Length: 359
Image 1 (cartoon, one colour):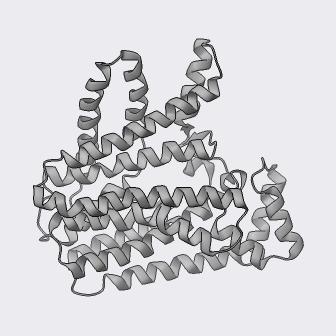
Image 2 (cartoon, one colour):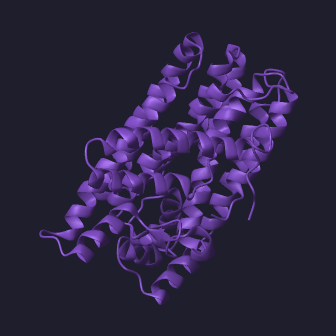
């Protein structure tokens, strides 16, 4: 498995974790003043955030700051805290995404809504355990979004820097929610075109995973406009490659590595570029088969046949080529003097890790 490098110094990952832990503990003190039982639910958010994940978005935020700062600069605590808040946006997105997709596992563990559902069932409470789990998980995700804003705004960043960063921060949240809405629309409407998954990739994933975190970090550093432009172009390309890799893992990934069932994207009925490319390149009969098993609980033999069709028709090779194209485009975007040499080194490593990962 590829290890994602830190943006500046080796201890940045631990500093991000520490900043998240402090903020979560502080906000939970407010919740515990309401009711200890509610605090137990908030504790599930703490567990989800602190006990898993790659911290990709904070890493790109720090990389954006580093690319516009001196090579030997240590990331100030307030900048690191602001970038760490991106992890809470990710927590909200994942918790809600798992509800939308009716996913049972995340990172090799029960999803938040399933774990709350199980607790309801184990305690023998009245009502529908599944509905209770979904209802509380929606609120836990909402809590993550609220706490992300609080962490970002109260990070201690200079007001002028914070003002520069608020525009991409607000845009990022609107973009990811819009992308998620389009994703759900695509699944329900049975869209098979390539433009729709490309738009979903651009806004549901690329914007809030890479482009906007880089933009936010650069804005916090007071980067020049040409640096911001270069970083955003890099971010769009890497973010789209990141999602295409995610689509590949959603069909071909190893559950022991991804933490999700094999072929989960097919079971969830996701309208990915890989699927669109497969239905376009396969024979009519093969395309019909792919669409017939989409959104169903595939048997092992059906999953194997779907995989074989995607490989044999050339869809997999085509998507891999597209990942390579996006990666080259990203590296070209940071090839000018607008991005510092030490910034380029970090960004190249992050691009490699994001596009060649196995989980």
